[in-house]
Amino acid sequence: MEVVPTKTHIALLASPGTGHLIPVLELGQRFAIHHGFLVTIFVVTTDASATQSQLPHYSSYKDLLDIVFLPPVDVSDLVTDSMAILSQLVLIMRHAMPILRTKVTALKPRPSALVADIFGTEAFEIADDLGMLKYMFNTTNAWFLALSLYYPHQDEANKHDHVYHHAPLNIPGCASLEYADTVDLYWQSDDRVLHDDYVKMGLDMAKADGILVNSWEYLEPKTLKALRDPNLLSRFSSVPVHPVGPLIRPVQPVGNSVSRSTALEWLDLQPAESVLYVSFGSGGTLSADQLTELAWGLELSQQRFVWVVRPPIESSAFGAYFRQEKRTEDGTPDYLPDGFATRTRKVGLVLEMWAPQTEILAHESIGGFLSHCGWNSTLESLINEVPMVCWPLYAEQGMNSAMLADHLGMAVRPKGVVPGGVVAREVIEKAIRRVMEKDEEPGKLVRAKVLDLKRSAEAALAKGGSSHGSLERVAKECETGLRERARGA
Ligand code: UDP
Image (cartoon, rainbow, N blue to C red):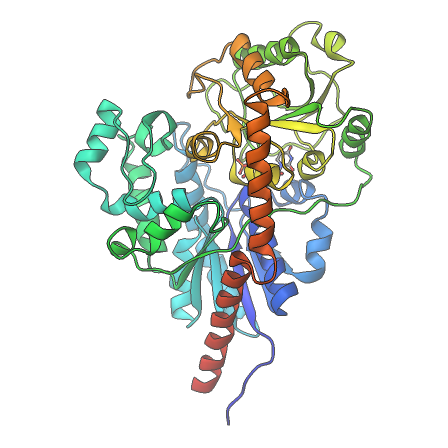
């Protein structure tokens, strides 16, 4: 007798980092709310309690989703100081696979699909063994996805020119990538582990039944076309690409946490669009010299600001990525220039370690965002019509920055933001003024662009919009997969 279950169950897998977990939770929520699916989310983390504390509305997700934190994996004896962040993530995920297999196998009803983020594609083997559909969720943009899929097949001569002569890197059918904006693997081209990790990731993701990407048709038409063109990128991988974004964490009602209310209450007192928000994501850190220059740049710009600061770290731009600290009372830390607090008391607010970012960006007094250009931060800025100052630090953030400033025109870029470099206070001051002075160029222009993009994002997500349609198609596939298996049972 044919047994057709009424509810589709899917499993999602998030790799360490708030920037991966948030979009995965948001995607899961959409499957639950819009399609009535049962959704189990497996979270790989280096510190589950710190991760939860960074999601103040974590409990609201729990009402809709079954969230399973896998036991932290200890890879400390395998990680070296010089190991790229990507290789560290790959290693952690690899070590989480056995326990993930046990947990997925035990799920009832058996999920019809497994959706893994970019670092979780090794889990496709589990999906294959259990007869599940497998999807990759690319939590960043389509341009980076294009590079990832192309990387195992790239033109070696062009790669050589890119690495050694700093020529632009060609990605078939897409905007080429300037060396100054390139991803870490080309800077660290002698890192064989990193190279092999990227190749494996590119090949693994090409085996998916589909790739969901946190972008939308209007934002990246050329790249999405290239990904689907059999003469361009689809030559290397014909995996269907579904732009389902922008999926971002929505603004939450005001809570009781100290830094949350402090920041929002302070913002309530400021004029509309007058405050620059400064933050480098969940893990970004600066050197001591760069922190000093940034503090001076902010002060010299004479603009109001909210700055999320972390203690300086000299050797790494992602010093706080795996090491999440608890939030503390705000106050001026001693690693900022002498007298900074006193001189900026009337115009600035310094928050240590962590801030309620989506709530801050949604506040009407915010007029600009100086950001490391992580993709979640970028989308949160865009959806709140906030133009950006780009300050990429690691991973694909340089690409994002080029896209925002040069392709989309919603951001300005200070000159000289390069790994290991120090951007001078005068350069920072100028970049801040350029974005904050809203009646002058380019401040006026970046505002018009960001408004246009925000409207396109809303249209993509609305019923009948391109992203809404993409997600419906994927949901249908998951439902069909379920029925087919039930028939075979
Ligand atoms: N975030 C936050 N408060 C902070 C720093 C970050 O809420 O003080 C959130 C931010 O809103 C975003 C995520 O953490 O949703 C960071 O993701 P992103 O992709 O921007 O950067 P990553 O941390 O992955 O580099």
